[in-house]
Length: 127
Image 1 (tube, rainbow, N blue to C red):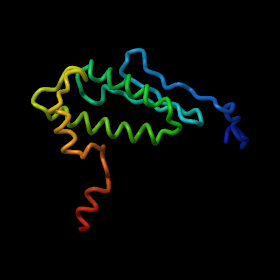
Image 2 (image 1 turned 120 degrees about the horizontal axis):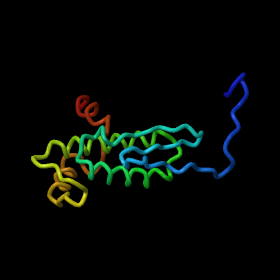
Image 3 (image 1 turned 180 degrees about the horizontal axis):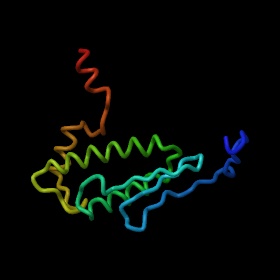
Image 4 (image 1 turned 45 degrees about the vertical axis):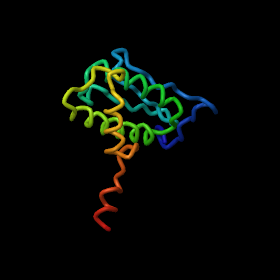
């Protein structure tokens, strides 16, 4: 609802606001189908700046098809987990082109090629 109990005027059919890569290349704003923005700051990943910029560009490009913040939040969770993995390495690559096949194999072995699954721990504990 918008002001005094009136429904907000929806965007025209087919309207999509493109996600915005911030001027610094380190923030991405995802606008959901209702027009509400949500910002993701890639500095929070504590990765080298070039790596953070590359991930931000990929995130912005991927998010063009998302209609809700839940999709963005799920992908952000995957990126956060990946950043934690990278930050645990002896030497963090400066950018994506510095990732080796061995590093990516370690990631896949540790995470089964998937991102975080909140049910994993619960299922293991219940077994």
